[in-house]
Length: 242
Image (cartoon, rainbow, N blue to C red):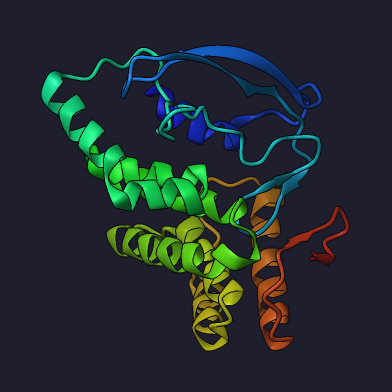
C-alpha cells in the first residue's frame, strides 16, 4: 500500500491495545519549493470505537495531523515520492493559483488533500475518503459544504459498488444524509439496508453483524427525532450524541 493510503487509513487499522496518544517530530522536504521543515506528527493512539461517520474516539488524534509545507500549504504525504519535472511544474502552478491560496486560507488540510489528489489523478475512492475525513475537522461553518461534497463522492462509490453489497458505503451515505438534515433520503437509505436480505454482509462475526444492525436502528431513531447530531453507540448499545 502506498504511504498516502497508509496514512489515510491508519485510523481504521489501529489495534485497541495501541499505546495512548503520542506525537513525535518528523523531518520533511517540501517538493514545491525544496525547503526542509520539521513538524509534529501522530505516532500512536488508542481508539475506543467509532462514530457513525467513521471518526474514532478515545486518546487518539482523529484525524491524524497531516504534514504541511509551511511556506505554501502543500500537503506532503509521501516523503519518498519523487515528482517528474512536468508534474512538479503543474503542482507549482496549482499551489500558486488563487483557488489554492483560498483553500490554504479558508479550508482544512484534508480538504486541501482531496483537491491535490484530484489534480494528481488519485482514485475516486481515495478522494472520497479524504473528503470524509475533512468533515471530521470541518467545524460548524465548513461542515455543510464538506459533507455535501463527501456525500456526492460516497454516492458515486455506492453506484460503483452496486450489486456487490457495498454496505459500509451505503451506511456512510445515510449518515451524511442525516447529518445534512436530508431525513427522507436518510430514512430511505437505512430502510433499504434493513430490508436487504444480504445485510449486514457475509463473513462477519456475529457480534459485528449485530452491531451493524444496531447502528441502522439507531440511525432510524435519530431520523425520527430529526437529529443531525454527531453520534455513536456506547458499550451498552445506547445512542451517544453531541
